[in-house]
Length: 366
Image (cartoon, rainbow, N blue to C red):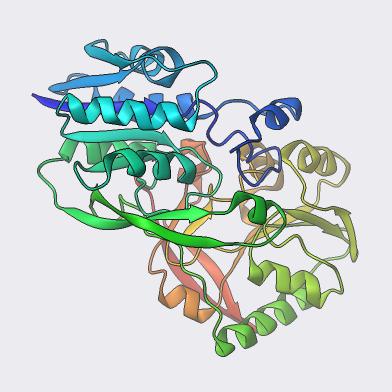
């Protein structure tokens, strides 16, 4: 019987839909804005698929693990650590040390980049780790692409190879002010299957890339329809479109524009839904994360399943430079609504230049 250490960061990802760039140090503000905890639900989605597997679960008490295992129907668990309430990064590190002492074969955690960093602090390369994605950004390469893929990787762990995968340290204060400052924190050992384990983010700044962004911006500017609400996701390519329109973008947030006027800057889900009630004709413009390939569900949770359904997937416009697409062979969607993700289909057209588009495969990791 395999032994797996499992923990949940109960507040991970709460900041996404309400327009916060992360939840570290922002849980109270996220709750004030109406955020709903999502990490437990994501973990239950993954672990429910593992009923009947020959796994002995080691975990933490209450919301940091025990409650999720019970909700997933996995009652064969041993509580090794009791965290303080509310939980903290110190609890994550302490729990992982307890897992190591118990001789687990794998540490599974549900959270984001901050949780990955805390797990790595305690575990290092002594035992493989795997993240169930539930954070806002998740630029580290230690996560499954979605909860279903996490279940598959956990089931096959021990029979599949591990690879050295980047743990990224993202400065959340800089991120909230519109600057992406990330450094390599270390390399963790992660069970790896192509199309199941996500890659790390890459940033593209070559001169040709800048010209391509200008071409994309020129084309999108030409085809924009009057009296239509445009929701622009995060990223430098979408920011260039707004700059072409003479507007100041929120580089790492979501903006809403109509008839050349910014109606909402750094908008949260609630604001977008209210705008869509007022302006039902709308389109969403997003760009995938370089190398990772996520179009939805990483860094743009404000564009929620409810927002996507109001706008309609037929009105989703994906943009990316040729260089980014060369390094991003596959696209993924992880909106939080598996049925909606399936509606995206097996490919998306991506605008990659002036009147130029490429069709890219979308991996449905069920």
